Length: 358
Image (cartoon, rainbow, N blue to C red; front, side, top):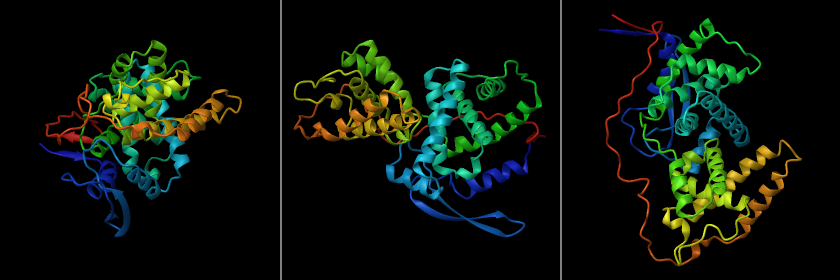
């Protein structure tokens, strides 16, 4: 049995797989210079600077910032594009009735993808749309909320063109897009090194709110704030327990809840959830910056001044991590542990035009 893959597919992986990623990569990310022959017939040499990939859940701020610089993007431009297409994933996922875990997983895949791939490879709106749909399609397999790819394509088209009421799913346009998505699918899963162990934090959030004896208004507010974390690079830097705890703290400030969350005697509340106050405060600041940027589009938005007030209050109040505390007995299992060893099985979609089997 033999397989023949199209030249387009081979070219797509020449830059991003053969020349950038080794399947045995297990070392921390460093910026390396990789020289690739992008056109063997013409002998044209191109030089790529990339993050070395490995199967790990989180990246440092320095790695993310350096990745942005290498790809030639300003922080504000990338943040705006990231938020726009993550919102697109949310809109399509909601249209299809996907659970929040599937939508969150798709956003994580999208955010991780842009750590390793230059903006020029997916610069147009159609290319980013294809990538967003691919991430959502892969997420349905990871979370086992399967949906036909054509159904996802049709709903995504309706989201991008809300003025159209009747869309024919048998149109050749969707068949062409389906083939493009199938090409990108392999690139997405190779980018994350086939590590499909992703922990959406929403269940943790509900447990945290219950443990802190918060009301339903706090839970809803924190839930919505937590969803915004996945439109930023926060999900690449911090574990789900830190994101959930920070969302609760920020929600309590927006709801004007004084002295909440409360400490457990001499034990700070955040240590119960295995979090550091420095991480929680940084997440809150970055989230407020994200909200301020969005609210700035409407100068009359009353929340703009509220966000600014809370942002200044977090800067002015000394961190409570200076308290001398005993080592508390953790009530939640640790998020990260020993290096994982497991077998992964992933079923790729096939396109008859690009792969034939004898």
